[in-house]
Amino acid sequence: MARMKFLCDAERCIECNACVTACKNEHEVPWGIQRRRLVTLDDGNPGERSISMSCMHCSDPPCAAVCPVDCFYQTADGVVLHDKDLCIGCGYCFYACPFGAPQYPKATNFGSRGKMDKCTFCTAGPVQDNTPEEYAKYGSNRLAEGKLPLCAEMCSTRALMAGDGAVLEDIYRERSVRRGYGSGAWGWSTAYADEDWGNAFSPGRVGIGKS
Amino acid sequence: MRKRIAFWLAPLCLMLALFLSFPSVAQLYQVPGPNSPTKKEDVPIYRQEPDKIVGRVSIPDEKLATLIQPEGREWRSFRLFIFRTVATVLVIGTVLALAAFYLVRGRIRLERGWSGYLVQRFNGFERMAHWLTAVSFIVMALTGLVITFGRPVLIPLLGHGWFSALADWSKLAHNFFSVPFLVGVFLILILWIKDNLPERADIDWIKQGGGLFSGGRVHPEAGRFNAGQKLIFWAVVLGGIALGITGFMLMAPFAVTGIGGMQAAHAVHALVASVLAAVIVAHIYIGTLGMEGAFDAMGRGEVDANWAREHHSRWYEELQERGEVPRSLPAE
Image (cartoon, rainbow over all chains, first blue to last red):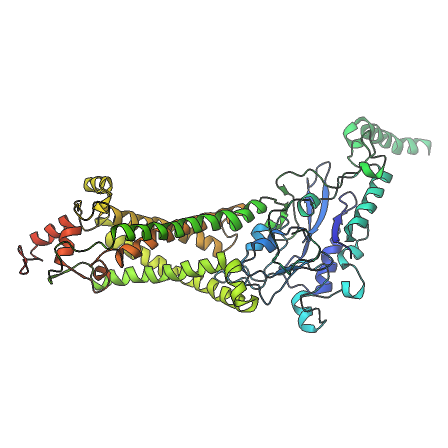
């Protein structure tokens, strides 16, 4: 099994927002929810970079660790998913997440924010039954069809890559040697470094991650 | 014709000269240099990243401009280890201390026994304010415990589905009971603040430990409220206000602060709640099991005259001066 990761090559990203649009369209993500977004650093200055960011499917996910209802789990591919039937919309995962990935459909209404929504690595939800209900909750399941996440497949400059982490790493290294520069894989030291802050997942909910 | 070409070429040459004379233009970061990787192993993958990386987003949600904020991991360890440890030590520690106190000292009895003569201590409105605050606090304390300790403690018992339903209702109850709680705290504040201002007798009361460890021989002087009760009053009022402010910040996320502020609000809320829960456990003990005759004050609102005389001597004298209690009790 592969260990699925995202890698955004900041030297290639041209901030076209195609990944964001592809994600929104593929999963019919409601207004106000940003499963994927583009962040531009040093905007207008030399060294400006844009990075496409979403849930990074961390090895030791803080969201899963702080969840009071234990609704997170990890698939055998290392994808971090959550069960919307269990989520109570408390917002803790957003406070813990290093990447601002968890999103909530409602922001007000006396603490009620609805079920958390985030990037599923195009893997849908826990039931994996390919029903309209599952699609409405989690979006499509491209991985089950042997396809990679649409954001990465759509990327015109191949800046955003999705797939087995070892393969992505190899592609990125080869690219950087050929062109002679590279700023590294943004967010990887936070998401995939060999740090472990404690058992993020409960027993039986872990796929291939460390925790 | 030639003149016309020269006319166009001159500014072009000027621009080209200007362009070449600015070395910064050529110093783009995306060029191979002496530090360029020559083989795959040299390429950095795991970057040394600063604590927080903030950029710009073209979507309305400004907080998503934060690309990486690893301090979420500190909040994670607060939520999972520090908060749980502090809450457990404070509350269980208080329970154990009270149990030890009960075993050593036993119930604090009325020295003179029941006189049978009752004095009004709290009127109906005061008791309503007390119980409004008390019931709201207990509901919020229990539902807060569900959110804090439910995952390790209750999920193995209830299973994920039932626990999630419980947690959902707990969150709603916790949010909604905040309103009666704050109304109660406000009423308590205006009803009792004049009797809870610090005074000289409080120092003696604290020095003598309230007479709690004197085997019932010593009853330091106290007015309507003794120094211990004043401490509870101020803990509830100030703690309640702190819980209210941070609680409403958590209920309206990102309305007044960013992600760091939300984490701080949660931390303050959690720690103040832990302290207050421990204080209230002690308060419940001394008001029920710990002291004979004490519960009547908040139960029926009237206390035995001997209780008033022993525990609140100066208040009792004031009642005598106002003629609310006879100078000498019939039972004596």
